[in-house]
Length: 475
Image (cartoon, rainbow, N blue to C red):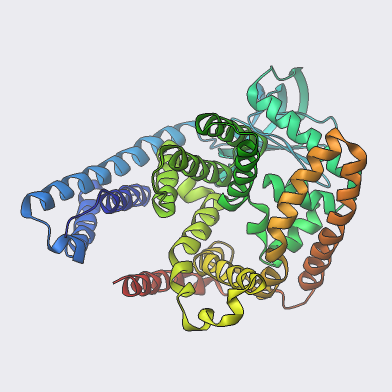
């Protein structure tokens, strides 16, 4: 038995992440090394390495240890840089800065992100990504770092005086955002609110088009993952585009180029959030595997996407809940869906037809994602949605139809408004159903409950048991 490069990559990736975590916890390199060595001994005793020669074991140890050191060094250097730029005192400021993320418009305020600072401002005048603004006000330090659209902030300004200095310059990202806003406007013309806002959130993975009440109801019913662009979203989009290009006899190379230009454009339109970037990287690896006629390993693609993002911005691992939930949900589906799919119950004849397949895929995907996500949500918020499993079953099976129909409706309403209006009428019926289901279950008094703070630490034995369960099933 030989150790595959895939296994070595996973072991090294896990060691890299362990180095980042231990460094973030403030442990010294010596203590961290002892902890790492203990885990490394367990790794070297696994079945795949037990029959590997001594020289190869030494080589494996070298790569794993090098990955650990790289993770430890990367987090340490990044944290030092972050702490030096952190806002630590309340003070009056007058600065000029560029808006580094698309502003989010809510019912009562406008949220603007500039380097290291989040600003809560009046809804009018509206500002855009890339605008240069002058700000006067009192800046306050936050209790901890927070991440907004991959931008980490440590200070807050509440309703300061803001003056536009210059509008954004022409850029690819600016053009993508403008096109997205145009599509959203087209959807708003053919589908009423709040359905159009919900549809915009489903397509672009953004909550800024949702009303505060609808966003709250979505969270209470455990559908937050529904408004996060995932690998499924991009896979559907790329598959539609690829089939369309093949229908017009486009070559494999041109298909690859067009698909990835679309991925890049969509990532910019969706705001380059961590979940978007992760999904885009995985979708790119999928198109690359098709172009190069190689087997696509979704688990390795997820790990590579996660490692790439954490290397560039280690704080995502600790401060960005969206990235954490997106990664855990995808990992849950990839790890546990194949295990549960082999269960005797799911082999019954009912699940062989199309309706049965949709039901099975919905149930297993929801529970596989929730298997890793819900404990982490409880740890972070101390809240748990009791209605989430049922609401997911009632809503998620129609997600591909809404996703594909929404994109088609937006484009056709832009090009041929009457056709878009016709499609929007039928799509609105499904969206009304979504809104009604979400509102009904969110209004139940027991929809969401809060757990005692001490129970959040049950996450440690829980994930240990999950690890042992997965290891047993894959022996």
